[in-house]
Structure formats: C-alpha cells, structure tokens
Amino acid sequence: MIDAVETKLKNQVGVLVAVAGKRDDERILKEHLDELAFLASTAKISVRNKFFQRLEKPDRRTFVGQGKLEEIKAYCASREIDVVIFDDDLTPSQLRNIEREFKCKIYDRSLLILDIFLNRAQTAQSKTQVELARYQYLMPRLTRMWTHLERQRGGTGTRGGAGEKEIETDRRMIRNQITVLKKKLDKIERQNEIQRKNRSQVVRAALVGYTNVGKSTLMRLLSKSDVKAEDKLFATVDATVRKVVVNNIPFLLSDTVGFIRKLPHHLIESFKSTLAEVQEADILIHVIDVSHTAFEDHIKVVRETLKELNAIEKPTLYVFNKIDLLPDDFGPIQDIFVEGINKSDQKVFISAGKKQNISELRQKLFEMIKVRHYQIFPNFWKADEEYWQ
Image (cartoon, rainbow, N blue to C red):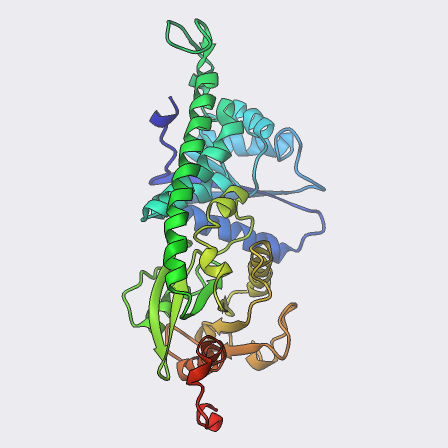
C-alpha cells in the first residue's frame, strides 16, 4: 500500500543528470548542477558524479539520449550508486522508461525538493501542505514509482472485486487522502485568517528571497530572537512571525520559505496559505545574496514567484546581503543594475553575518514602516514631521 512506501532519502550515494540547450552558457549549467548538488546534500545524498548533455530539448523517451543513458547506467552499475537525480521534472513515461534501465532509484528535481520539505516541516500546517503536494505529485506516477503495485489483488472486500489491481486501489486511496488533506488545510486556514485579522492593526513586513540567502540570519538580527538559521537550502519551511520595534514603532516581521528555481507547482499551490504572510504584508524585504554569481537569476526567480502570488507591486526594500564575501574585483556595489529593480527603489548593502551596515538597514526599514504605521494610526502623526526625518 502507498502508506508503507518510504521515499525519504538518507545517507545515500547519487549522481546528477542535466540537459542543457546547445546555446546555453557553460556558467549557467554549472550553477544549476551546483544547486542540484546542494539540494542533494541537504537531503543527505553524497554526490559521486555529474552528467550533462547538450540537446535542443530533452529526449521525449528517456530525457537524455540513448548513448548518454548507457554511459550513466554503466557508471551506476560499477560504482553501486543508490540514486540518480535529474535536474528537471520527468514525465511519467520518461520515468517509466528510465526505471526500466536502472536498478537504483530515480528521482527528479520536484521529488527531491518534496522530500526535503517533508523532512523539514515542523508545524501541522506545513506538514499537511507538503503531504498534499506530495500526493498530488505521485498520483500520475504510481506505476513508475513502485513495481509491486502492478500485482493483482484478489479476495473479497475490494470495490472492483477479485482481480482489482493494487494500483487502482492506491489511486483511490490517494484521491481520498487528498480530499482529507484539503479539508484539513481549509480548517487551518480559517484559524489563520482569524489570527491575521487580529494583527490587522499592526504594520506587517515579510522577508522574501531565494533559498539560503540569509533571511533567517537577518530575522535573528532584527528580532533578537532564536530563529533557526543554517547554511542549507530550505532551512526555513514554516512561516515564523516576530514582533520588532524600530525607533519606537512596532511591526510584525515574518520569515517565509525560500524560493528556488523550478519550485514544484504543487508545492507553491499547497504553500499559498503559508505564503499568505507575503500576500498580506504591507512591506516586502527582498534579501539577495549578492556574493552568489547567479544572484541576478535568483532575483528573477523571486520576482516571478511574487508575481504568481500577486505580491509584486508591494513596497519593497532590496537588501543585498553578504557583501563581506564579494571578490575584490567586483566593483562599486552601489552601481549594481538588475532588471526589475529601479534606481528609485529602496536598496541597502549589508552583511547580516558580520553585522555590517545594519544601522542603515534599520533606518531605511523605519522610513518605509512609518508611512504605513501612520496610515493605520493617522491621529498619532506628530505635528513636528521633521522629528521623523
């Protein structure tokens, strides 16, 4: 049965597989494979090798060409590889064809991310969200994931009578489970809506950004609270809210799940209730790891996700973090130009880890928060406006 299947990855050895377009930049390909390796490490998988192939588009049958598939297959057989991880989502037919060739487990990017989320979720809400996303992902892939499901189920008590396939039973079980999880999430969301209404008279700011850019470290710094911060992808899965006071003005600061390239669609859909902290925030604090060579691509991914959440137009403070890690030849950081960020947008360059320029960050944040604060409490506006400048 589906409930008896364990998909968590622990202390295994794997290889990575990616397909790049014939005109794709070599640097971008390396960044993508490095990120996939970081994901694998987060899931406790030791990466033994990386394979990539340049194609106009992934092979419809096996994702990579037959020759490359044979090369990977031979390597895995000779090195006792446990897991082969593909950097894109495999279609059900691709997964079926690839599994016929390999004796080890086959994972695509979405399933790897789902496993990481499953291991890191702490609250009832996030656990329910991840389980829902996982079931929705697995539904069309059941025949590919477990060959034992193809066996015939005999006996009485099954809806299809004698001979009903186990897979048909498991599909029905998953559909029922999805219904149960959706009802559970609806109930949790109604409770959350009440909590959010109770916070409507306080300015709300939300930390957003690519995963592992330092949001949780910044959260600890601003809120002076013991928020978990690790050098791992998706260290934060559950939304965390803390009260912060800047220049005598209180506001609520939330740390949300980090975004990532090719974030599974089911995961975004399931996490929309948690990401309501982003949708309902008055101000967004977009944290960027400016030391990362692909930071501009990361900004685009975050902005695309915010657009999907209808939160792209919110007042945003762009926080370029980790300036202490910049190479000597980086040039003047103030001259950074990124598509989508205007010169008039609020920006600040800091190192949360080294606590550099934090006072400037607090001042810029205060200037944005006070505007919203006095919209909520207009009677508290000081007659001497110059006091706040």
